[in-house]
Amino acid sequence: MIRDITFGQYYPGKSVLHRMDPRMKLVLTFAMIVAVFICHNFYALALMVVFAVSAVLLSRVPLRMILKSIKPILIILAFTAVLNIFYTKGGATYFEWWKISVTEKGVNTAIFTVIRIIVLVVISSLLTYTTTPTMLTDAIERLLSPLKIFHIKVHTLAMMMTLALRFIPTLIEEIERIMNAQKARGADLESGGLIHRAKALVPIFIPLMVSSFRRAYELAFAMTCRCYTGGNGRTRMKQMKLRAADFIALLLCLAVIAGIIVLNIFFTRII
Amino acid sequence: MTYPVELRNVSFYYSAGTPIQVAALKNINLKIGRGELVGIIGHTGSGKSTLISHFNGLLRPSEGSVIIDGEDLGNDKETLRAARFKVGLCFQYPEAQLFEETVAGDIAFGPKNMKLPNDEIQSRVLKAAEFVGLRPELLDKSPFDLSGGEKRRAAIAGVMAMEPEVLVLDEPAAGLDPGGKNEILAMITEYRKRTGCTAVLVSHSMEDIANIADRVIVMNGGTIAMDGTVNEIFSRSAELKNMGLNVPEITRIFIRLRELGYDVPTDVYSVEKGAEILREIIGRRSPL
Ligand SMILES: Nc1ncnc2c1ncn2[C@@H]1O[C@H](COP(=O)(O)OP(=O)(O)OP(=O)(O)O)[C@@H](O)[C@H]1O
Ligand SMILES: [Mg+2]
Image 1 (tube, each protein chain N blue to C red):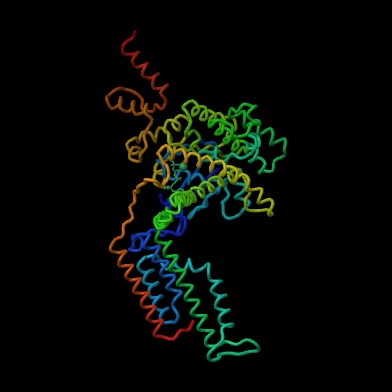
Image 2: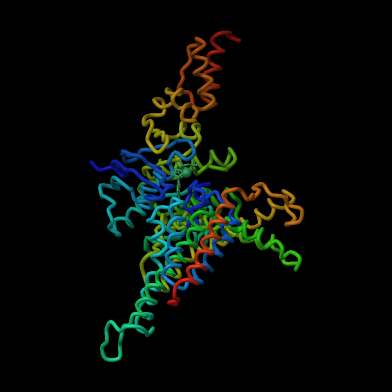
């Protein structure tokens, strides 16, 4: 089943973070994202950076993968930095020319914001690196299950999400297979203008549709045959259980948040 | 001397450079001669489909080179495209590739891509359809209305209509009933007899290969474990067993008879031939 988990960015491993209860991971990730936003000075932010770096080390996800998740936001980072440097004014002036000036406050804000965004991205991608999409939807389902009292079909939604996630790799595989088969018959998918390319997709798209519908019917039949009737009274094979590691993680995160609040109070606010 | 298909030190990795990297082919050296009918057998996951996908450049080797008709499939687009038409590849469960409104249109897809003139395409479609035994009235139907076996034939016809120099079929008989299976195999032998093309046939089934192939290649764990004539390969039944393969049942019976001291040949691959030999022996013993 290796191919099932290559989707998303799950990075297989056995670290503490991988083995944590996904519910706790999800909640703590949210909490820490909020924590990044309440940092108001470099000391608090430094604590957050220490937290993020330790989490990365604990997860044993290679640095290369982490950098890969930062790559797509490089442009946003550059943009934010430039905007902040030139538009935030205050403190000593480092540089001035015509209408453009760079001030102490501008530079500080720029550095602060860039670090903040990087920490945000690292923390949230760590969640997806250490949790499979299926586990994540499972966790979401369980966290949202109180909504049942408002007659929201949490289970059905989660099942649809899980199935969609489950079938993305299958579809990718299917597309690959069909593309190969058509290429073997000389289909030219790479060259030509826009219209030519759109036309060239027909031999891929039609078999894909046909097989997807067939698959959906088959799956529905198979589920019905195994007495699937929705969420009511359904038990689980993989029980999620909070263990010591989860509580330790909780305490650590609380400590970091407390630390941030204290540092916020004791040092001057810069943002 | 050039070979229609030649592989030199070919290795191939799926998901190269990630923790889930799979070495699907390991240092393969292979030459397929003109006009040969080569059978490739191997346990599931041994790399058969990966191997044949290299023959027409669908997969590019991670290491080593693939030479088709004396030309190295480098990165040149034209050579690659030419290879697609020289080597006609028909994948496992090819019925999944049907898409046109009519069966005839689908068979014509390959020849159309070759930019052949219209009347040539027409005649090839008819020829291929007749060859695989699709009745003419089926040609105007939608391919999705055909039965499973008919879809398979239509898909194979789609590859045959390109009249490739090398015809490669991946498990052409998988999932068909014994009758349908024999018809497909007979069709391949007949096609080869008529066109003299080189053919490669991938199969799980020893019986199928034994009866039609000149040469057998046994794949195991991404390497070529054995390469030889049918007789050579099947005489090493113990080794085959270790690879999760088995010689045909009828052959096993004859090997066992030989072990028990009967003077019987062990190169018997079809039940008919086996029955004939046994009848003869029994006839010799007790002339009724
Ligand atoms: N797209 C892919 N991504 C990753 N690994 C793959 C992929 N396709 C095949 N593999 C792996 O490569 C190896 C060889 O696969 P291949 O499909 O060539 O086997 P095969 O001999 O054709 O098997 P079968 O008889 O079941 O068709 C297997 O271990 C398989 O899991
Ligand atoms: Mg295969």
